[in-house]
Image 1 (spheres, rainbow, N blue to C red):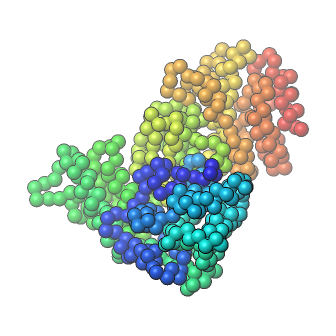
Image 2: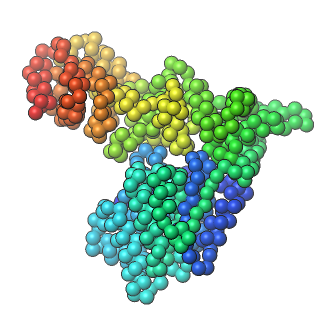
Image 3: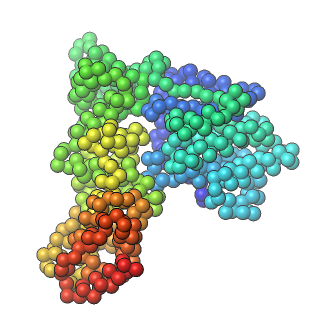
Length: 555
């Protein structure tokens, strides 16, 4: 079943280490979920767990799924993620095949029924969401029931976490409807736990369900229990940090670390929000700094200032916290850092066709390995930065979607905001600049000596290796045609081709077609009419080639 997404599963390496409930926390909601799962009658086969960003929904989902597995009750689990660089975990067409695969591994009768269906029509794996659900989930279990074959003695639990991070809002609502229809069938031995933020469209879809008969609900809110849980998590985490840095942290005789007043400031600021507390712990325990005491003192001073001016909303404080983290990035490299982060914020701009590893990002930006890691040096508390060894294969990723939301909102991030328009313009500009350098480097006979040396210098910035493989840069520096759909009336994008040496193009079909699409898309917007550089292009054979390419653009 190649259409599945194993990296969205319970024990997937791509999710390691997965979020989990801190020992002793979330007792109320875990008790309610256990009662629902192990109920005898199972009147409600569907449970919606909802709550705002950062309260720990995924941790509850992970912990509860593991509990169900230990009790041989887990059928399958799928953890959506909008932060997955490959976009596989946010693709709605991958969830049902993934669930079906996990169920087939677990249950032999279901596996046989599913295998028969797929042998007849393997294209089911790539069908529409409702067709997948009907053919891969409903029909195999119905087939077993019609032959009086019991798939399982007790119903299986299926966990779908992060529904709001599915890339298509309509698919989110459709999946809720499909699950609710399945929950009403007596021939399906399945229980469904759906976890999400209470987004308006999801809330509306659930409101149309008959909750008294069909769906149970639970809310993770910022209440007294959550505050106590977060305080316990902070205390235990600080104990571990103290043990790890005992040779660095000096504590007066009879004192404690952190001091109670400092701990109180951090605890009050976290105010029951686990994402805030976990970010605090990563900042204090940042191995690139190696000084937890100094980090905590600086952090508590900032948080005390917020408290003094009356900021008690943890979500508002989280935004200010993120701004503080970004303020630590040196000004001379801040714009580079923001641009790199944009590959995480706007990864959907590439429609999943390009997998931007760290190495590809620094090649595309033309900054090189050293600048890449320098730009991210102060951001390890909010982002997983691949090691030098893993840079060719791994992507930068955020610890929590709230940081991506923050960067994408001008109201929340202020001067650190990276708009889609700005990112697209810089993305296209960087790509054309490096691609132009490749062409100039490969055609020294058609440009001047100084231009050739300049091109070589730009390409040398793309990699840390002295013996640079320019073919690798050519392969990596490609502009997805999908970006054109995001350009709209972005006039900044059309500044990029002005200095592009079209005379060096032979038949670079991809780039020409991109520029052709760009001009046609904006033809009636009075933007593209002057974007082609009309000055003299160096080289003795350029005129004929330029006319050739302009004729293609005009077709």
